[in-house]
Length: 69
Image (cartoon, rainbow, N blue to C red; front, side, top):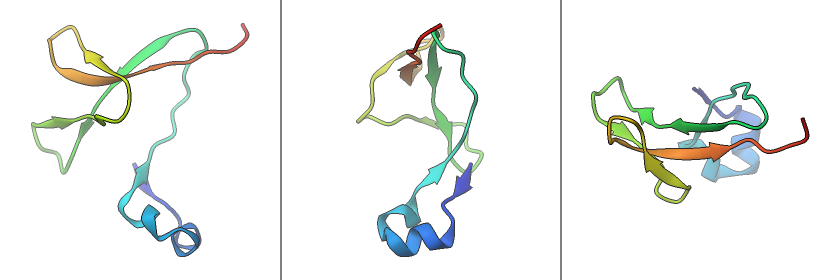
């Protein structure tokens, strides 16, 4: 995870509290993800994004990568 660059934060101060992560995902697949904050055992997910449970019953976010194959 990375913080947004300072020049972006100056243009949009709301980004100061956000992080981003870039990942290469394959088209046509669905992914589940969640976050560990400060290396804690408790995992977080974004309740404003689509959610579901992983195979262990833990809540996580869902994303489907659509596009032409």
